[in-house]
Length: 218
Image (cartoon, rainbow, N blue to C red; front, top):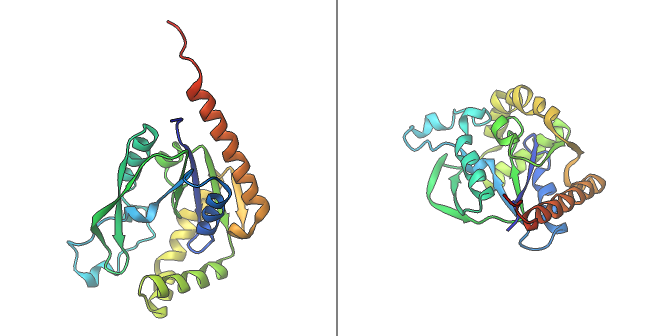
């Protein structure tokens, strides 16, 4: 198989990254795109008392085991299968079960900090930053964390003020300068999504051509 094309999708929490990824997957053929979420690589805190776990700054790069994600991306690029961690966001621990993943023509790296890490950026063929107003992002984060992660509105707002906003300003927002393409308002920006899909198709075509080219004779 041709070397996978790696797409990095970053942006603030609640910016609409997941919508962009969903629309990209929808535009390409079934089975072409796999998604590796940075969130899956949060460090296991099972050794830490629960009342201390909830105070951890989960928006700081050090809260993620990015080195393991880098190793997994490299393995996929080499044609190997990986076991992706599963994370329990309500208990802040890694689950024992993992999720198997095999290489696909397109690999999407999704997360607020994927463009902030030089090692991850070096593996990307296309880098996208989803840029959405802060008030919209906050509303989306409240809805998500209350509905999917068992959080209270008060705890979401407290975390946003204490860590999410400061870390966004320190790490996430500056990482947009590494993006090849800015996507205002997430996946509802059809023109930007179409540009991403067009570029991915071109990169996949180039990867197939490279894989089928005869090796130079010695």
